[in-house]
Length: 628
Image: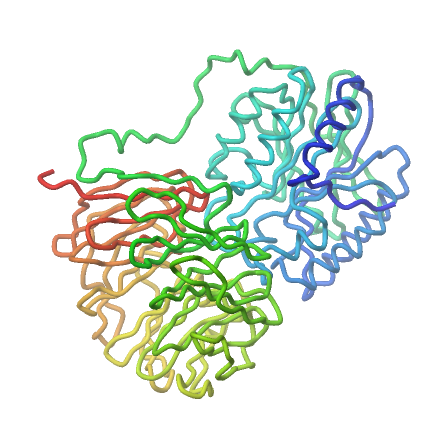
């Protein structure tokens, strides 16, 4: 018997919680065993991962003592549709109930915008009762973005509902792919909620090794990867709840060995009465005398995984609930919203009265900027995660189906279709010198003729690892050159007409990634390094030359969002939710403001305001304070 995860949403929530409450209320803690599997990393290009999982499934099926199976993320290597379907096919062979959540590999590089996981497995959260314990699990991202882990905002809302309907005495086991520490930007949001209940244990994966932790005083256990790695056989854990203890045994199929390696006590810690202080991110920077203040803030109930656009008196956003919506620029109040059928990671583009964005429900949408009503929608064959750009009443946008399209703005009519994209597109394209440029998650970078969509040239970085693709950066161009950065930590300058490499290099002692932008005078390409520096690279030199450097020094930094300059101020987003304003002339930091502790999207300056949003659904309107 196979069972996909029990996910709770909307109409099913009330009935599920009532049933769960009744079950928990009459149940008493019992002794039982279950299988704890993690990090299976099913990869179409690597047969051993599937073989390792098949062995584990067969081994679990042969053990009648195991009551159920939990699987804590990174089910696939790239979150590809075929990988997810293969994983489901193998797991369907289990003869026990099984519960599954995604990890960062299932969401960061997902061609479906993380929609296929929900479709294949039935949900991305689960909650169930066994032996008197509540097992509750949330997914982890950040979806479609590089950065530290994050529990999606909608999962936080879901978990809050589950816990609010759980009796205080009920013992709780929480599961997530990540360790519940600073590995995950909003770990404390979850921890604070769990501590209001009888939380007794946290299970996670991600690290690929068996390991014990203490998360804010809560016992935690990381399970090994199911992959064989340097061994000849993979493995998983058998967990036994008995006599107030949880015992962990590493199990290796085929050779059928068990190795007891950890034991932790299960009891009510009474954390709701705990006065111990644990580290939490500080927002003190916002209270100090500063050169910036927040005029208003808005909290979405889902993640915001893309940038924003201005439509006269409105701010246009998208979220992972599938909404395209407008906020009043002056006060942050919602004006209208339009629901699509999938999560959205596409930054909307506004042209006149038209708002265009893609959705992972496989459609490109055009709405009225005034009313939010649908004007047209055009289907793609797969999810549309990429962002559009509009020029001369033509919409240009990529998708996950191997196509890059040009559509008539007023009608959505297809004008041309380039159908030879090797991988899927997630970026915002660049228009320059009558060509359109974009990268994809297959190591390739394309230049198409703007009028016809014909291929002008294609460049590859030569890597066999598609995680190094120049796919997530917003390319920039000037002086007949196109500039890109990528996870391979190289910056590349290409001839805009031919695609010839003019120079390609790593910044000495500074690791660049996807975050970059062009100065308003086109003299510099800004690059934010993983080591936390903001550099200006010459756009005219024949080699990579650092022509400008800011005094800004950040900690380790991964946020891929674009850097923007406006009126002599450079706006720098970070993965810790702090926005920085840097003076273009001096390179000094003018101000900083912490919106949240989660990854920032691209910052949008407009007139005297600065709009900043973060992945956990927070939006702030900031304004510089004169005289400070």
